Length: 317
Length: 266
Image (cartoon, rainbow over all chains, first blue to last red; front, side, top):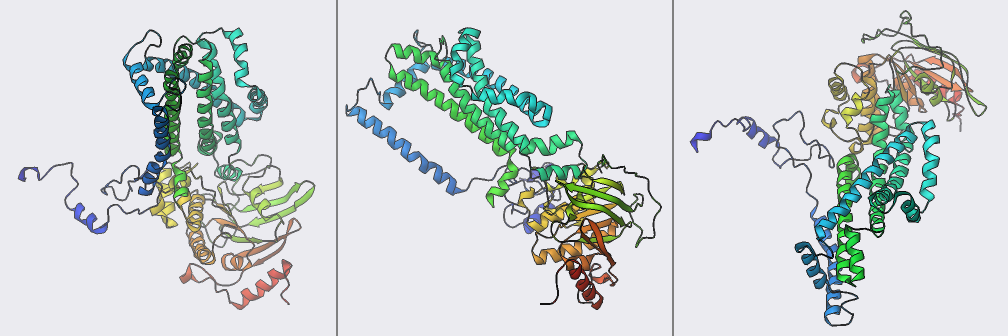
């Protein structure tokens, strides 16, 4: 190929062999494990970039597959028991029936249920609005309470009282206050999400290592710098734990809230199916709830891995 | 350095007292003086009218048995203790290295060193400080991946990059193994020689004090009860280290141990 000798995007031909000689092994971990975010050493701009994230060790992958065995076995057993006629197909529909029901709920817009994806979007929207509202309020209040004594005295007692209230016991009151439309549902989700997120973020801010704060003061950090570099990053691990907890509570709140006079959404499908004694439809709706919960939890864990990359060094040692 | 609020600090640069050396740094040469420092914890006077003088560029070691208030004094000089009363006068730039490195684990080593730096190009300054302590390669590493010695070197770089007129070292080598500690001693002496800050090293290690310092102090009953110069020549070929078997050092070591209440007999 004589024509592509001087392609500008390639590194200069002279540096490439040098590097090959310097680094016979592909990208040796010259620095440390567990800090893959900044793979490009400034001293060696031509060094081949290491992959953004190191591949998980094979052991982990094999382990993940191994963990699938028992759930799959249970599903198989369930199918066998149903096929053998040992349980009533109406009480416990076999997995294959549930699957077919799921497919038909997705593909056909039935007058009784609508479509599954349509219902899912309605539920997802409720969840998103309620959760976003709750999270913003919770983080705001946690910052106010965490960063000042006055704020703590003003906010924290109220939040401590709120946390002791049984969330679902509030439903009748909410119906009286907010009716039976979207508002009480969204507020219930917001409240459910806000409490654990507030508690953990507040505790995270207050739990920041005092020795690091002292070091920050010794370095002459301003109040803003202190919050930005010491307090908020220090509180982040626990705030993220709170985020995962609050997602769990919020999904639960969604399920319960949707039992109250829902005319759309997954809860509506469930209440319809209850009237028609269609346990297979109920199981499909429950599976969608579970899948949504899993997905959001995975998203937060992804966020944790990104934001708390500095901890991975500790874990890999 | 942060303002030391309740203390009537006058930051006027005092005329350069005859010091052991003139600092190479452009910062105004200021001696550190403390007068009548008092600090009580629950009615117990840890500092009781303490007076202290450190000449510019002087390396002073402060010894004392546990609980005598060595760290309290250091925190007072660093402006970290707002309940100390008395007068402290000293250089504007004071830097501290603590017993633990106290690096922010969520910032890279480089970002830690550059943290709060008010110079025009903090990153460049931080890089050269890291080069001085031999940590160029670890600039982008997370602190939790550093060894104990590396982390303490990073903490030293973070203190020195501020070009302090007074460097406060709070037992920074006590958690290190013996070999790493010896390496750190030479590093500290080399850095001190190059930047010439006044140094107050709090330590419980008599030998460390004797090898490193120009002058050794003993803190007891809330005051400086003993002060003696270490009149033993430094070896310029060994980063200003001293021969720890020099007769004068042995004599001073006996005296210090006696001052600290450690009997030599038996």
